[in-house]
Every structure is written in structure tokens, then in C-alpha cells.
Image (tube, rainbow, N blue to C red; front, side, top):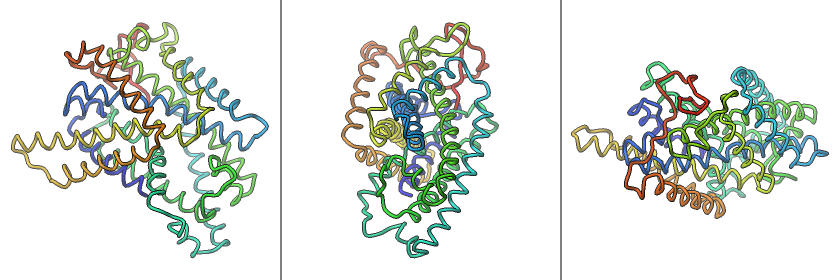
Length: 412
């Protein structure tokens, strides 16, 4: 619930900014327009850390849960299998990915509904309604522990901001996109809260033989091994489709940044002559995912959240900067909606960064230092505006050239 509330504050700022900037909106555009082109670049650079580690975490989750069901195969082997298969698919290209994702989404949704029913049945038989109250809050619960966990749980929300990149693809974007962003946060948050509550009701506390695969173990407890195995396989199929989509999206983002000069164009801004896919980018992302075997799930997730929370903080600051500019020009907006809520959102995002752990913060700050150095190079010592990172184009998104000079709309 804390993670939902925290993300909703930022979601409201995203919604307002998407209405103000209905072009290929994102933190890149907002920071560039409302603050400074160099800050816009750095916000994009920070989120690139998020995008690079998203596939790693997706693959790590796959490996953990497949190993839990098939322990004879080492976790590292499952990781390599997932990375190689997803990378090969993205190098070749996968036109049916959208249809596959829709079918698998229905399958995963059905499994979650069955899991919810089984958790309620099990909870009623083991402690009843008093245990449900203990699942929400008990003597072992503390505010510090819950807020620290919320900083990790916020990983589940990442992607709601991607809706803002579709402003040029929908009808009436100034109305549709803001609603979509808020509804994405609220819908996801509702699912997360309900499922987490029911699972905690069925299995109070956090003591598991392996916390990383707690979901599989709990499914076994409430529904038996057969149900757990079926649910795990369906979830893993859906997860693999997500891995493919995440890697594809990241490779496209890197391509756009390379095409626009934010990254070395000769390396990242080119497409394969025959396959018309950013092969180098896909391979780089696959290589970044392999070290996941040496990371815990919490650490890998924290790396993602650092870049995301930093970008979210800037979106809230952009909202305030926009309101200040409007006030100076004579237009008065609601102080609560345009100052208080964005300020609260920025404060929450900064606080969540402090809860990520020292390793994640050090990695994130190191990444920012690299970004500042690279920014100094491409702006000739900060004397020029930073290149604009465009996530979309008014032109045909399929009109790409092997050399990467044409537009390419990243998959969402």
C-alpha cells in the first residue's frame, strides 16, 4: 500500500506533464522543456540504468523459480538459457510477440484468480478472520521494515511511465494518456495489495526456506504441488515473454539515444542490414544480464529502482517548475495539486532511494558520474545543449534504414 501511494503521487505528476507535453512524453522531454537540456539528458541517463537492469532482474526471477521447480538444473544454467533464448529472439525479431503476450496475460490472470481463491480457503481453515487482521499488521511489523520493503516492491510498478511515450499513437492524448497513467498505477496497486494480503494471510510472517521463491512454496502450501507446478510454468511462460519485450524495449531505447547522438552513434545507432534490429544493443543487454547469477534478487532490483526513483523525482520537480512558470505568467493553478502533491512525491522518491541500500546507491551515483563525464564530452564542456533523446517520431516508425538514420519507435 505504501508503494502504491508513493507511485501514485508521481503518477499524478506524470499525468499532468503528459497533458502539458502531449508529444512523445517522458522524463526526458519534461526535464528538457521545464528545466534544462543537460538535466534532460541526465534524467534519461539515470533511467537507462533502470532499463539496462530490468532484463537482468526478469531473467534472474525466471532462473530462481525454474530452479525451485526443477532443482536438478542449477540456477545459473536456467539464467544462461533464458538470456540466450531471449537474445536470439530479439536479434532475429519477433512479430507475434504482442499476440503471445496477450494470450499469456490471460493465462497469468487466471492463475492469480485461482491462487486468490485458494489463499482465502486456506486462510479460513487456518486461523480464520483473526489471522487476516494479523496479516495486515502485527507485533513483528515495523514502519522502517515496511518502508524499506516498499522501496523494493516499487519495482513492480516500473513501466507505468512508459504509457507517456505513446502520446503520438492515441486519440486525444491530452485526455487519454493522463487517465491511462493513473489507472495503470491504481490497477496494478490493487492487484499487488490484494494478492500480497491474501498470501500473508495464508502464510503469516516472512520465514521461508528460500524467500526468493516464496511464491512457489506458498502455492504448494495452498493448492498442492500440481497446482504450484502449473502456476509456475504459466508464470514462467509469461515471464519469458516479458523478458523478450523488456530486452527489445531497452535495445530500442539505446538505438534512439545512439541515433540522436546521446550515445556513440556508430556503435548503438545502427541496425543490422538484413534483420533491421539493433543487434549490438541486444547483445550488450544480454551480456549485462549474465552477472545476475552473482547478485541477490533484492540487490538487482535495487539497482533498477535507483534510476527509476531519480527519474521520478525529476518529474515531480518538473511539475513544480511548470507551475512556477505559469504563476509568473499570470496563470494560477491549485497549490495543492501543482505544488504540495509534487513536492510530496519528490520527497517520497528521495526517501525511497535512501532505503535501497549502500550498494545500489553507490552503483547509481557511479553511473551518474559516468553520465556527467559523457555529457561534458558531447556538449564540449557543457557549452552546448545536450542532444535530445526522442522516443517517438511523427514519421512512419517502420521507415528505418540499415545505418540507423531513420526513426524507430521502441516497443512498450
